[in-house]
Length: 263
Image 1 (cartoon, rainbow, N blue to C red):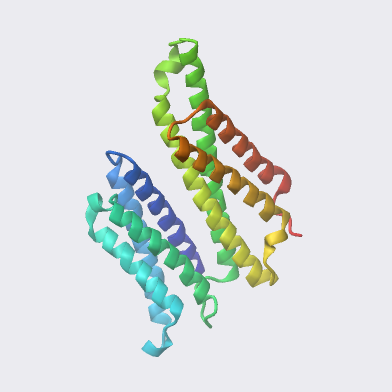
Image 2 (cartoon, rainbow, N blue to C red):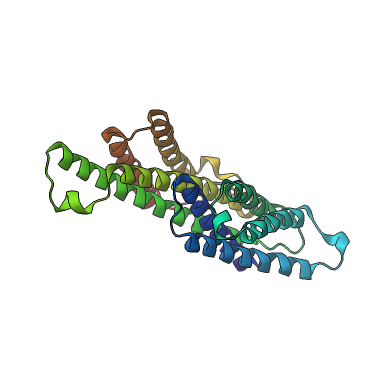
């Protein structure tokens, strides 16, 4: 069941990201895509939930992990029942933020069961999937920051060329960079948590002093600093975009030079 659980968590994370993005927009874009993500997550979580119920010999065999999974399944079921419009509402965002956290908690609690649905190999796969999605979001934020600098330079020099005509507005690029950075930071944090969890289960130690973990934590703090700076100023500046580029350089350095070497 581990593969199904990993797939359900990845689909649930993507649906939650879309819900946050839709909530941040005045007019949610692509409601069908967002609702489709919730439907996919609902189907996968349902498979995990029903498979777990089928493995129980009796009602007395349920665990705390089963209860957490049931609540998470109920929350995403309510979201799907709300329809396309409701899937992008603040209610859906808050419900599924709690639901996703409970679904991850269910995997941790179920690890204590005699029939876990998240074995160590699946936990490592979930960690890798979250890390890949986080780095992908950071790559997009880097691209949007670079576009922002290019467009701003042309506006300063009054060069209304093809770059100016085809690039989105500065406000749009700022919004996209901010969303991608926030998404990447959230996914990276979850990847760090699942990585520590895997280390405790497999290596029987918390990898807090592991070079990979420490450098990753440093990269996360860089992006958190950018987010705090951006929210405090409310308006993007050239310095913010340069800082975002430096943040992505740190992420690439972590990926290329630190790697996944164990202590």
